Length: 100
Length: 241
Image (cartoon, rainbow over the protein chains, first blue to last red):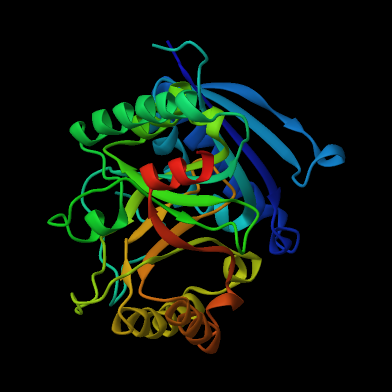
């Protein structure tokens, strides 16, 4: 049972907009590979939604994980691939109500 | 532990997967007398269970495990929009999340409206060499690498780390104990926690002037809390009795 929800709000940092399309595509491809690896490990992505009109951020992405450590593993692989250097973020983690 | 940035002269990587539990809490009115005593007793039982499971409940014990681990918080109401702040350390990330749920369920939520922040330990504690000082002040720094840091070159970041290390060495020479560094980016907008115990307001103020002098804040955006140390038992009793 995936008892942990993990929520990632993000928006591009200013220098993202100056980066070439080729470079941006390469970075996004790398982050997509990381997401695919997290799915292989049992993480369950619930989707990414556009929230620019109602938020300080541009997107919100939501995942379910089996443990807080699995969420952290996913996130550290993303930050290891420079995600946080191109996107400002605000994250949260939650344990299912009535879990355990 | 995966480091967000590299070790420095002052800070070295920590082993294991321990996880901080920060509480930034506003008092809630309502409980008094026997109901208050009962609520604190239930919370205290949970904290005693935590201690048996490997939690640490004070920075003094994190820095020096020989010092008795009295559950501790800091009174921050004089200068901040929260009345108390503090940091525990859980044995794992999952234990930290479950711990916040257990404390709220034990009645913490009747006493305080709380922002909980959690994050794994990244750097080991840094202990000042002066063991004679009484450190009655706590300083919490939440910070993020800002857009300027993100756009900087690796060389610019290395130079910046060296400059900041001068300030951190100044802090420790001033008598400050530093609980190390914890990552907060898993579950907040912040990247790190810096948590200190210091002997006076003036020492922290002088330290911040030094961090300003070395341009620490050109690459970081931070929020700071400064408060007076009180045992949690005394603080809850005093504030709600």
